[in-house]
Length: 413
Image (cartoon, rainbow, N blue to C red; front, side):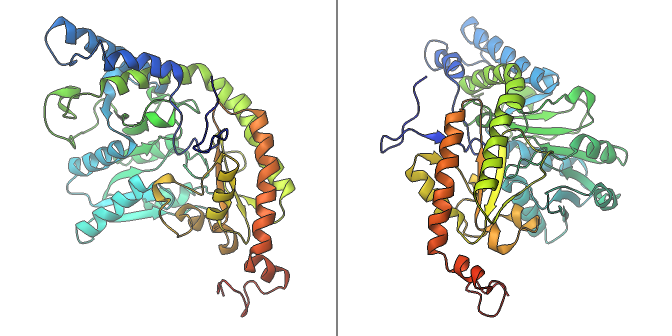
């Protein structure tokens, strides 16, 4: 496989896999016929369309197998965001007399912004509880249990955080909600394909996943709806997806996602073995080589591919721009919030100090990353931080003991 090249011809070292992943060559090969010779509509009655419908059914079965679901429990959507919105709005429609939503302060914008929008749109008739997290990004289950009430319609808690990789105990949380007759949704976009999931042993009602996070194309997602869970479609139209999501199916995307899930199941051991080891080497090296750096997130309860490190007294955007000159792709948080100059809402919720929250970098690996790439980042990133600190008034102020005081240039006091 030829290495990726940037616009300037540099080799790309891609460590932004929580934002999106490359389409696996086997996935692309599986998709291509459905753009050309196998172009029939899977809902058509004729044989030409019927053969496409059978392949869609086979892909649905492969996806279901990866997450321990039944094929008929899966609804194809356009992305994780659509799946999230569909699940939460369906739960509210199923319980019109209930007005309370429980979520967390560290959710992806797909959930966070929807819940806040519902609160505003209904004149605060929908009450939203956003659960706090501790310094390691973990939830307090006692606080969660106390937040549940007779008025709670739905709980929406992500399986794994997209910025820190922290894994939440969603299966236990779903059981606690079930005991109170509350519907439970999890955004598992980052978790699917990286850690084992078996919904057959769970009482989770709704689960969202997105193809482009596990080497399938963008534009295809899935919503799992547990058999018997109340449901109302978000997109109303034809009879597709058993009447649960109107619109002609994205056949090529579905085929690609099916293949990607098959590959993810086969590579789960590598994800949790070699990829984890590369992540640990990268993380350990950065924390050892760069002073005033800190890990964001629980050291153990994390996805195997994700590290989020803060470097005090520098700006994350400047770090990324300098890394980009070396062909290294990273991020400072969620790609869906990259247009904001505010520090990450996830890191703020975790209580990361102001002097460090702006200087955070997320590095997220995949099975395509190599040890040579990790060594390159370990060589370049310390140079970048040292260079930026030489120019930073905050760094200079810290050495004069002014940070946090009356003369602090960031006015954080």
